[in-house]
Image 1: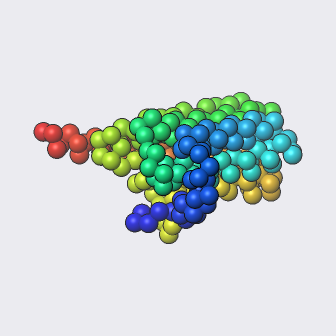
Image 2 (image 1 turned 45 degrees about the vertical axis):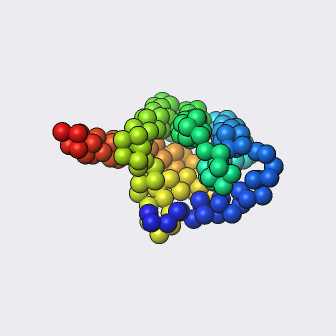
Length: 204
């Protein structure tokens, strides 16, 4: 997209009060991971009110994920470590979510498929991270080039986890998210292959 998505634009404004606090971008990333893991752990309980609080906390964590990058840019504290840390933090958060969902619904109508679906989502999260890092390294385009439209990115759909869980549709969401994660992993793989081919052609 030509313009940053709406959540990133909002984060750009909301992060400004943090600039004078001494909070570093990497510390902000750690806070985000703690929130995401806590949310995933509450979701794993599989019962209200834990799963409701967990969904809200995870959605908040994904929004806060934009704060570290904005804080780094606005304070000039960008670093190579922070770049990789942010990628790993994001992948770990999504992996924790899928594992938590898999545990939560293992005794439901999904049965053993719940654990398998959670594993697919977690593996897709880490696989996409590795391929995105390689895409960034070779072509300077990773998550910034993921599908988006009208100020929203594909990953913004994760914000729906909170209202969906609150409405009692957690298991259908899990099925859709697991399938979507697999498809997203395949999309990233296709993008990875295309970038690799362009780089190979340029070196030939």
